[in-house]
Amino acid sequence: MDSILVKGNGALSGTIPIAGAKNACLTLMPATLLSEEPLTLTNAPRLSDIATMTQLLQSLGAEVASLQDGLVLAMSSHNIANHTADYDIVRKMRASILVLGPMLARDGHAVVSLPGGCAIGARPVDLHLQAFEAMGAELDLRDGYVHAKAPGGRLRGAVVNFPFVSVGATENALMAATLAKGTTVLKNAAREPEIVDLARCLRKMGAQIEGEGTSTITIQGVDRLNGATHPVVTDRIELGTYMLVPAICGGEVECLGGTLELVGAFAEKLDAAGVSVTQTERGLKVSRKNGRVHAVDVVTEPFPGFPTDLQAQMMALLCTAEGTSVLEERIFENRFMHAPELTRMGAKIEVHGGTAKVTGVARLKGARVMATDLRASVSLILAALAAEGETVVSRVYHLDRGYERLEEKLRACGAQIERISQ
Ligand code: EPZ
Image (cartoon, rainbow, N blue to C red; front, side, top):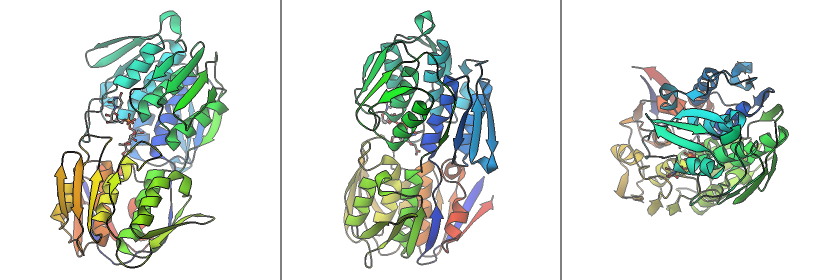
């Protein structure tokens, strides 16, 4: 397994290109199952999760070609030869559940392995299933699989009231509703930019959708969808992650492709901590206002609130801030696994359930640490960039799921970082 070696190297400055969003691409790709016509995605990120979704779609009989060094995904599913999403692939990546809605909508039946939990929580899919049942699907859970059928071969439009916001359930129901008979209204829908991007792509395919980006999305079902070409929206989580580099190390970084619209609440929190964020023509320019950042409190919420996927990274910054910060993780039940690893680097963190109290220290110290999940791993990298001495982060396969060419992007800003095979 690879590890990454980082030597704290003072202030970092330069430009970092931000890739297409992993979490948009992982819902845009299954949309190819909704149509017999080709769907081509551009600005796709080069990540292991995208390779996993490619493998899954191919196992269902879709054609997926990765072109231009992975930036373009040319997909088509003239027919779905196999309607079973196998556990061996699904267990590697929870987003696999997003093939269920499209298959059910297109052909009236599907069998998809339940994804199981992951490091950050149990992560059930009950809201996804609730939505499909509301749309007339008959679901049978057995042997760890969801066996889904639409009576008469077609879902019907329905009003779906989500008891709480779920990004994946909103995406799954949105895709299914495009081919249902009649009108579907999704209430308490997720408002993330990835949902807006999916709706825009589906509309290009001929779907009739209104209200994406708000809590109520209305879809008029159509009989068939066409093909389309669509650029994947910029990755707001990669963007936020790299905005923290000059915040934690000093220096000035311009994140190409970044917009304030994608990271509103996060940028406001950085501003409150003493980090300036400026929109330029090319992206977002970030630097400290003056000297050390200071403590701020953080509560994670669905968009447009502070993103849970930036909580671990923000904690790394606050470990070096002046004062005490309180971070409350309201989305996942076990998303502080980076805390004990940061503590090995000298951080002062007290975790009580879903709340972490962080007392800033002047400088973290390099240490051997272990990545536990995607966002925890990059939080350790950020801490290591600012720490005194050397840090070795092990199990970096987590990192490769969500950050393309991370070492290359950071070295371009002066970081001393390299991958070591162990
Ligand atoms: C998406 O996961 C993202 N993944 C996650 O990013 C992100 O953290 C999350 O949304 C929240 O923004 C992708 O888009 C591939 P949810 P998702 O359904 O859809 C519970 C990353 O690091 N829940 O909004 O799975 C769930 O357990 C990843 O890139 C149910 O109880 O998130 C969680 O506590 C991590 N039942 C909360 O709701 C359900 O049916 C929010 O989950 C669905 C969800």
